[in-house]
Image 1 (cartoon, helix red, strand yellow):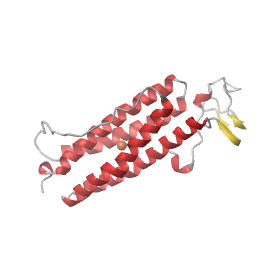
Image 2 (image 1 turned 60 degrees about the horizontal axis):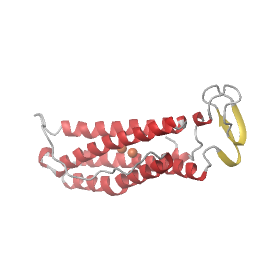
Image 3 (image 1 turned 180 degrees about the vertical axis):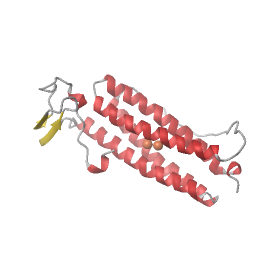
Image 4 (image 1 turned 120 degrees about the horizontal axis):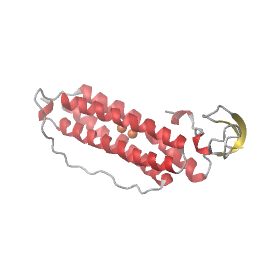
Length: 199
Ligand SMILES: [Fe+2]
Ligand SMILES: [Fe+2]
């Protein structure tokens, strides 16, 4: 089957649109986080934003290779979420939900269709992206849980906190509100994430 005659081409266009929108939605969340003083969370989200950009780039590249001619238009019909309001904690939960949807429901179907249509490389691409979206889901879920429970900068046991601005370190239950050395705000301190939620 030719790629430009296939369902897989439409799925690639959907995936491209979905990744572009995820990227923009996460930039909105990042913008809100930075505004509220959560600079370290904003930096983490920025890494995810860049991952989505590159997912979009890979899908776009596959579409470009479908035809030597210019592809003027691909009609797609699908729903996209518009759930987020300007609430950081809630948006982290919603982002995790969208990542789960991509990783568990949408991309596995796209991978299967690609394989059925004989596009093994594209099936593999979808499967590789799934592994990353699962990691994104994990990161958003962990940040959501720490924000919701108030444990982002306050732990039950003493932990090592480090100021990324000046390098000051301290082992204590709660991170300082302002760095004792350089006065940097608490929100610049990197959240402590379990190994499976590190980007
Ligand atoms: Fe993605
Ligand atoms: Fe993602």
